[in-house]
Length: 188
Ligand SMILES: Nc1ncnc2c1ncn2[C@@H]1O[C@H](COP(=O)(O)OP(=O)(O)O)[C@@H](O)[C@H]1O
Ligand SMILES: [Mg+2]
Image 1 (spheres, rainbow, N blue to C red):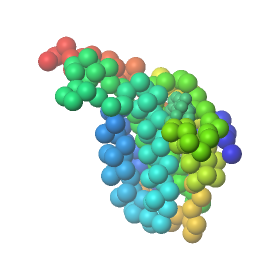
Image 2 (image 1 turned 180 degrees about the horizontal axis):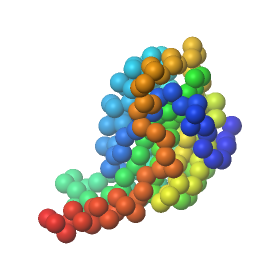
Image 3 (image 1 turned 135 degrees about the horizontal axis):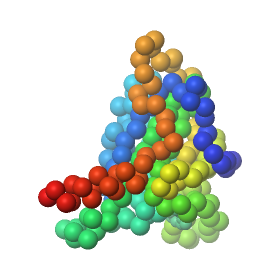
């Protein structure tokens, strides 16, 4: 099922884990490595395979959508200068885990009908299979694509006094990140 808009209410959030990565091919493996400990901490390791698969597909699409992907070996300065960020967030709710991935493109994802011998176009089909719902929404400087996976038994309650691990916001401020990058370049 596809839906528009943010898929949860902040007050229902039990855990949040967020990571910002350079929009290059390496982001897929890096995102996998950092997601695992979060799922263990939330006692949700049993959905790890599905969550990591969905996250990998969404991150792969995000880096392609950001116009990045495979860099020359070694990468050129021009390529490095143009790299954007993608942001990956896992949100633990009572009965589900939401994977949200932001990129700088405002093109929405499009589920494709693919034939048996087609080489691409299966990522979102897979996401649709594994997720109870998925969708996208416009965010400052781009958009977020999200998928919500059911979790059974429910995730534990967050221990009293512990923050969820990063309050969900409307998304990263890409313009601010660009200004910081420009400032760093000037200082070098
Ligand atoms: N984050 C995204 N930004 C822009 N377009 C996207 C994004 N994710 C998916 N799409 C669009 O949806 C299509 C289908 O995605 P997918 O099923 O993963 O297949 P593939 O990535 O192999 O083309 C993509 O070809 C692209 O046009
Ligand atoms: Mg894809």
